[in-house]
Image (cartoon, rainbow, N blue to C red; front, side, top):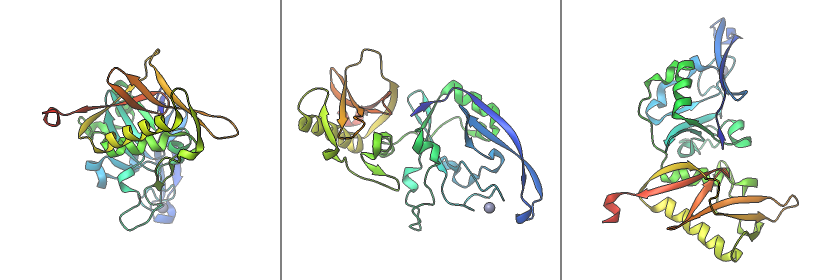
Length: 253
Ligand SMILES: [Zn+2]
């Protein structure tokens, strides 16, 4: 998970003659020097209401779906706009597992977070997104999938098929007995999946008590997975942000 800092666009010339369009000029969007959208003029509007787009389109014709993969969803949670895998679309309707897989940069570096100010800046560079005043909110199931997707070393498998936690790969917890702490973790995951609640994402504060797990791995990796507060535990995604879910007033009654 990565907080966007630098936004840039640049023009490029492309040869679309194979699809009868001749030579064209297109604009790429880079976030922190990574090309996040390769041809913003070719963003396809068919899934506008879902806020799901092919971020990297075919460089020979600019037509969405010409090649598989490189899809992402735009979501809001707390004060952030997120670019995440289009989880609900994987596997695709026709069973085409690769059709809606995310761009490699989301898998390698992590999902992208923009503050609302950064997204406003993005709109000046990508006018297509001017239409978004309201955003689709990150759902419970998307938050759970994001937690799994952001866990280190494919502890929950990899897309297109995220799975349950591979408990046997964890060696120890930073506090308490490993089995008990893993039960706490799995309980928090179930709560996130089942509770009707609004999801928010907030940065971990400096002295926040965290619980890490250690991987059974040659390069002994630490996985910051849980935070602790007066009301219990919660999940951390991408090592830096906590998932907060607030029960609606209705479900508290
Ligand atoms: Zn093409």
